[in-house]
Length: 197
Length: 316
Image 1 (cartoon, helix red, strand yellow):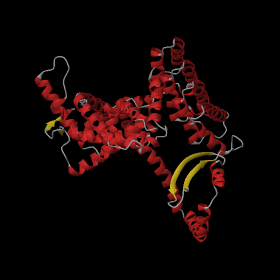
Image 2 (image 1 turned 30 degrees about the vertical axis):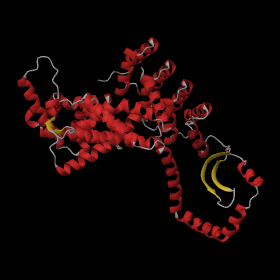
Image 3 (image 1 turned 135 degrees about the vertical axis):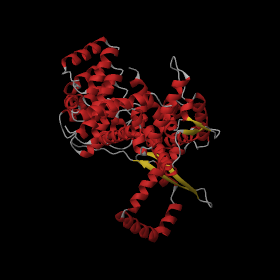
Image 4 (image 1 turned 180 degrees about the vertical axis):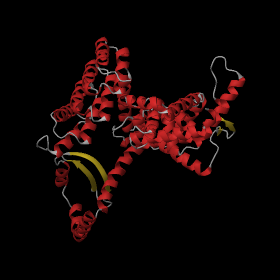
């Protein structure tokens, strides 16, 4: 039952940040930065692109915190900024048709994202690990074939567990549209992954 | 129910987004439709497969690197930039007025007038006695800001351009949209907590009495007060005002559920439970009630939540 306290803290921090208090803004950043980086990393598949989006999002928030009117939570507001930046990135990438699951680290070296997913399950063995990676690659290919908006709705719902009403609010659309988009996304994913059923 | 609609609902069910009251119809359809049963199995299989490839968490190094880069970027930004933006937005507002045809014509006429009298005004300003200047500065209303200072190179005189805040009073009925607009602004008052308190109380009483509170700004103001006001009395009053809209407005319902889950004051949480009476069969409401019944710090609230759950129709 401490969330209300944190919401009030958020309000105080936002008001302080609006008065130009940078420490307050940095405290807000600390609360959301991991979720923001996770979203950007999973959507871009590139550490360097994820860092760029992370930075652009929080700089944009810093510049515009003065116009934040408390009509939604700071969480929704920052997610709205990040998702817009990610959507731009996905649209550009669709034009370039990059291979999303092959990522580049900050030194520019390519690696497979799934190679870095640690398997902490007890009894994990190389054969099962290989199968899991193969499956992961196919899932990433299937995700890449969604439109940027379908990908975003699916990402926010499936990986971030947000309610579709919140997803709609973040993407400036209705809950109904978010529902339809999720339905289309799951249908396409199933079609693309049909062989693994 | 046709298969297309059923399949949409299956996707929502898989993600816990199908309202409880729609479950029986879907179950009925699934019992008789083989195609949709296959669809249901396929959606479950997809979820199982997706669970094997979870999203990668950013490494601690990557996060630290991103934080450092952000700090460096923030260092290069001017400290008062937000203040400058506030000023810029004010000027943008003024320039938008200038773009309006009527305002543009008015500005043109003003410009012509100002031009004709320019020489005379200039001379008059430069020879204004000190006593007259002091009087201008002492006028009614606080000085909000100084816009510019132009020193006269040939004398000790300076010309100071400034803005003044002029206090005004409005008197009218609570149904008057202008008064309501002022009250909505009052709910955000940071200067005097009493203003925010009075504004929320009055708006809540109007909504409770069913006096034209269907418009967005008032509900929004009450929701903001419920979420963020530090005074539990104000939050209680905001709840009262929101009561008539719990059934029809999902945003209000969410606000009340958040208060039930998170408000630090037990009276506010307790009142939130009462407000949920018309929608207690809703899945999201039941979910919150379950959480509160098992986790709330207050034993009375836990008991009441459980009682509400036991009494409400159980739809699965």
